[in-house]
Amino acid sequence: MRIEPLGQDRYHRTFWHFDVHRDTHDIVLVHDPALDGWLMIDSADDLQALRNKLNVRGLREKRLRNLFVCFYQFLCEWSVFRRQD
Image (cartoon, rainbow, N blue to C red; front, side):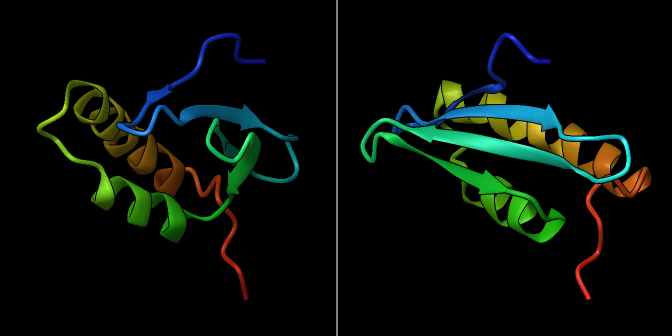
């Protein structure tokens, strides 16, 4: 289990990656302090949309976006995110 987050965006939302179960798929959980709650990203399309919205001019988001680029390629290559029918 991950102990450190993947990173934060400009709104100080914290992103975490979890391998839910070997037979299912990975998810990215987002803690949003403004909502005092959690959001879940569990599809490759949602992860790609998030990646495209990150601003590369900010240090936090540039680092997070670069990480998501590598992470997205890994997930697609290994089909970790299941295709939704």
